Length: 87
Image (tube, rainbow, N blue to C red; front, top):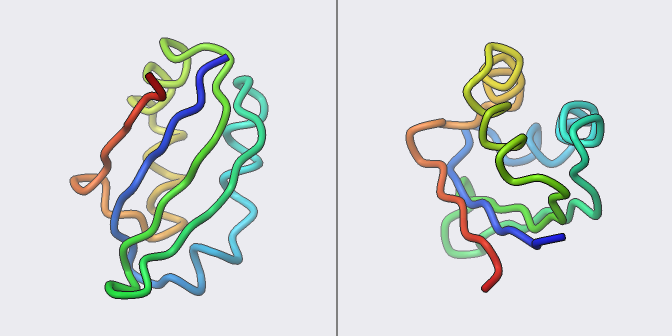
């Protein structure tokens, strides 16, 4: 199971940190051990590290309306998303 890192910008870091949305949308598709990070130099730059059972399933999910709605709810700026896979 690969571990991935995702970083991106958000509109409101406190809202993003407090949101239960990540767990609600990612756990049903096999994403576990989700950890959140913030950039102390750029407060609206945040990241996640998580274990992903199926990368293809995750990437397909990221193209759905449900993913877009979750990102909008959390204030994620989708154009800033970067996915890194543990090598």
